[in-house]
Length: 295
Image 1 (cartoon, rainbow, N blue to C red):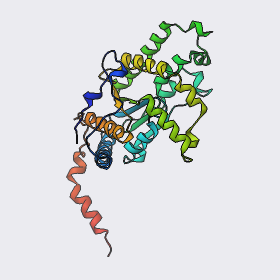
Image 2 (image 1 turned 120 degrees about the vertical axis):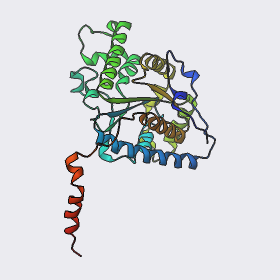
Image 3 (image 1 turned 30 degrees about the vertical axis):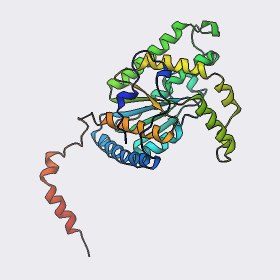
Image 4 (image 1 turned 90 degrees about the vertical axis):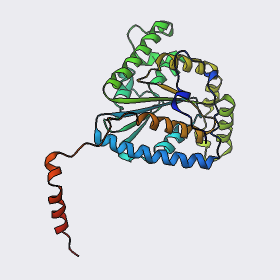
């Protein structure tokens, strides 16, 4: 089995998604990949237990991708062995009326994981520089000062929004949040096939919306804005990884492997030592418990 490393998928500088593959062969059968993923999941679960005990870091995993890129199933398969109380998933939809009364990052701030926990954002704060650039009229719903019509939304507006995102990520990183950002990279043909499967399988019909076809017509526009967003915001403290995702099993394995590979570099994440008072009395505590035994 091939042994890819995180650097192979790391986005750096100005990127062109055409330079990144949508398919990646690990050289083994699907069952072998699934077994490898199971082992990584166990290690991630163990690391999360230590993370909780250590109590100084949190982990934020951000997932973005075109429609049908496999975000939901990746979350299910990568994180299912973690303690349910140690991982919180947020799926960000159209902003609510309450959310629109706050700045665009507010709903993401309040969803951040506490120290000791994993947080997963299924769609993220980047929707505010992706969907809204394709459909800038959505910005008008935010009722912002000096933005009264679409013509008021200039390139300077977007640069300031990117600056806000960079500052947001820099701030939470400085305060102990370990950030991962993954773009699940599928081909347009693979998306077509997945949409067809949604139509053909009764169990998948509910996922299909005619709006999927309207969004598909904007494929190139969305891809261009993804390239711009990733290029402007991939830094060592908040890196973007572009994951080949035409094969879902491979995408899940690569994502999990990158997360584990990077987390184990935090050598200071260790279980805390027992206090000297407790340590010197361990034998006494054991004796008390053993005396309680009643056959």
